[in-house]
Image 1: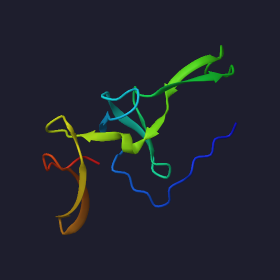
Image 2: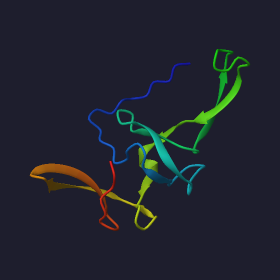
Image 3: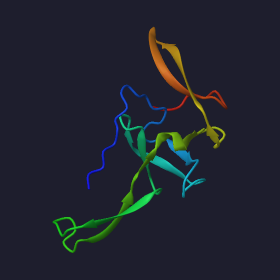
Length: 119
């Protein structure tokens, strides 16, 4: 069975690879993890240690035995909140433009503490 996922054109996510996030909904709600992959065109992300699925694999060079492998699956980006590095609590993300060395630079910042986020 082929599952088609509708791509979202021109979508911009507030989450980036490497961010610490808190899961808001689903079976893993309340858990925290690091963002491993981001798929902006699908509005989905992969979070470390969250939303596992079982995959039946044939024997290959990596896994000569084959069998059932567990790995993280994607979750919708709207179901997570970025964790503020200063307060260690979930926060909304804003964007602002700073002038650094005479150049404009767009940065993300925490709405709770006002601190800029890495990345």
